[in-house]
Image 1: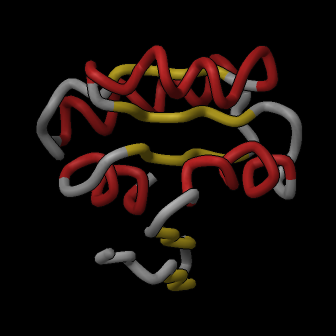
Image 2: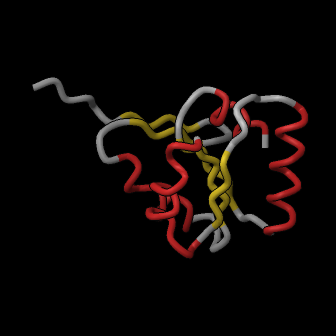
Length: 100
């Protein structure tokens, strides 16, 4: 059986990957306060809501790491008064959440 090893990287942000990593999201977000904002792909929005529950806000990321999208998410984070931002998925979501 091919099992992936869990990986964690810590920069100015934290990156977690591997089996069961998604289950760590609530605990990781709680370290930064009680108002997390989670960016997600369209296909993962409901999964993200199920994991984060009423403890945070889940927002669908609109696909590109552009100035327009980053400005939109920054505005949402300010309105929501987010204490932390996480990205579910890879690529553009992770790059954008790193910028934020």
